[in-house]
Image (cartoon, rainbow over all chains, first blue to last red; front, side, top):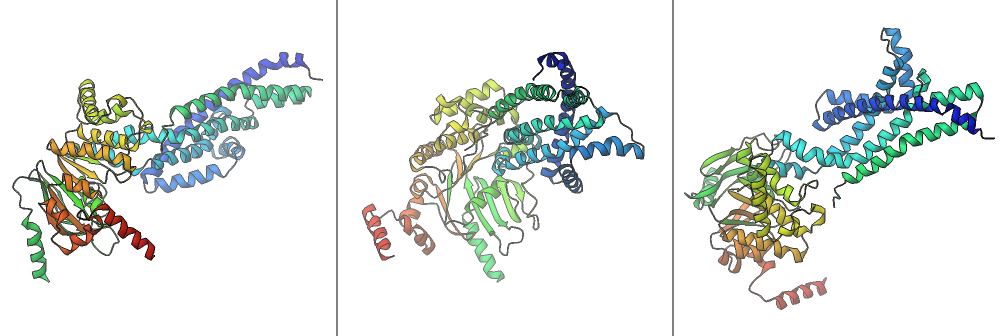
Length: 218
Length: 292
């Protein structure tokens, strides 16, 4: 039978776990967005050498599992002298994975701004910087937004992997409780509910953002 | 060979030594990287202040490219472009891939350009589209820029759409906003690149009306168009461009359109024959259709 008393007793575990999930996600996603911006900028500006490095990074990042990336950071790097705590590894890991996905979404946005918009800006006398910040980026943001929102949600879900390097996120709490008390249903129920509580508002906010930046092009 | 070249240049220069010329194009050469032939192999013409030069010609003759080189959107490989007697662009061979001309911002705004595809900034409303450049580039006060924008919108009949987003406007309305956006910078010369070609027929008129009014007000313009009736009504001078060459030019548009003097002009204008009445043209078209 479903044991509600177990739920009420151990719900605070999930509150703590949720904070950890959010902490890792917020910083990991911020790092991913920053990495994505830099990579998309390099790719769009076609800067030699850096462009090739970016392509290699994107391929490695997208074609290896996050779990493997985390193991490399947490268990591999100490062998060559880099010892980072689990939180740092988790944030860097999430940023490393998310960076390539963000870069692709942002690059698509930047490249979809028609050439004629830049030509209009040129004829109106805009400087290169004004063209970028006032014409290209605002339009690219609109086009990138659905991809970026999807990536944010994807990365929050993907953060469940950090439990593998002993970080006490929501996934870790569920595994811990199941291991100790065998209350599988109740633990998984609380796990799913916690993720929904975190993700539903973000999903709704994301939909609003997508609408806000959709300029209804022809 | 040399003799011939000299002769061609002389013929072309005949009408271009214009003391009052606002825009002077001399021996312009345009070449695309990897292309076998030059797009333009040394063409010259001028636009006097307050006059309207209309460029006509078959598709692919280089009309739009000509406008784009003058605007600075395409590099030129030879010749010069002068504005108000100052050389602003000198062609350099081998710069095909150098991108847009490195013109200072103040110089760029002396040219206003309206493109065929009415591209407004989708993230700004009508007023925002028009006032962006005067505020950002000319550092004018927002209130003053908005006041002038409203006057311009009034002039083109769109004052009530000042706060509409571009996607809420029809093609003709967008094109009129694009004209306002160019005009607010007080360009010395307005370049119109087939501005009605992408519009539905019923919207062509509302846009052309605005252009005619501008011409009456003394705006110097360089217009590329396929609308021959419009060209005839508005032109002070006409150039017929074919295969990158000026094959005919006239300072008497009425004669050019109704009684063309050269074979090339006759050939080109045949399909737009103004002397025959419409029934006659329709019958001929039907006849051709029946024969096929």
